[in-house]
Length: 458
Image (tube, rainbow, N blue to C red; front, side, top):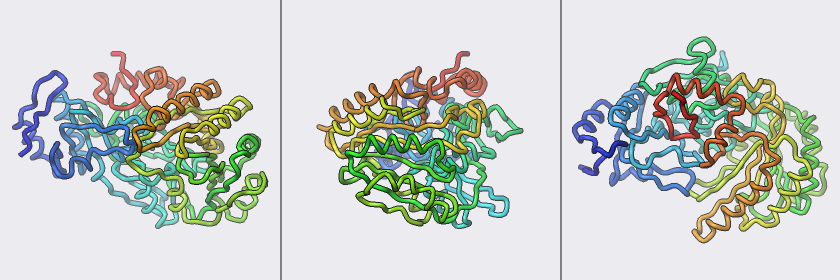
């Protein structure tokens, strides 16, 4: 038996009999320090964080989530919520306290006739895609298959299909969730509509969403792959991409990058075309006409292969800064080119991802995710294993960000680190005050604070 004490926020030890009673009411398991699967249950994608929760509750259903919240509240435990563990800021696991681990909740049911997918919160993106593509259907779901679906969607959800289909949160029809006071609720456009508005971009602050109902659309093979150009063409390629953005078809999403484990030095355009393949060949001509390429791997491929193309290994140490760039003007391009040249390692780099089409069809106030203007999602990042690379890697990212920040307007909450309250405000823009009001209603004690936190004012 593990006798390590569980300490509440008021400094008192939680009685072992209370823990035993709580455990007896769960079909899922409670994992504690020293047990065989403890390290697996607490591990995070970003290796910068090595947190040690006192209890990990592997919940198997919404009722167990509700019981865990009640236990955590009753014993004043710091509470984190983990689905895929992909939080860049390490928010998915608590130090001490309790972590609600949703990974056992992997149920998914696809209704191909109605084109609706019902999915539980423990699914990874790749698992969701695997189920929907069997029916020739898909919806926007990020760009890395090992990302937790719940965290992605609740922060907005950029991805390869967003020009055609909008963000992941734009395709939500309903959610089931547990609020901070332990109530199990359903939210959609008619029922608890205010909560439904809030979870589409700021969901981690308001409730634990345990299941999702999505609209899915037909999708067959996509035209996908990478065109690699010599690194010294970077400035010209970025200018061409900016020129192309205004006429870029909705079915096309592109990510331009250098570094970040891309292999040999090159400037890469990775593209996904989600429409008619013949029309896609025409749409790709502006990207292929920039000049002689080092390689061009774009071809018809399964959507799942597209989703895995830019995945980064789990467990590496990673440091990011990011923001939305309305326009790749001369200042932004000069900054990018200068920092490509000064990168401390081949795994230090940047990306810009096109935002246009259906993403911009919604108004900023339609969902908690407010950034609806055409432009680019930008991030600079460094990844390392050797501890000696930590300081030069992070210093380079900070320098890069300092030069890019004047070009940015807003930030994607899913690619934020620990950046402070003002940056959280920036993530939600004009929607922030409305979200504070929702926080006051649904979580007035800030029980859900292991997130990019919106603080209540009551």
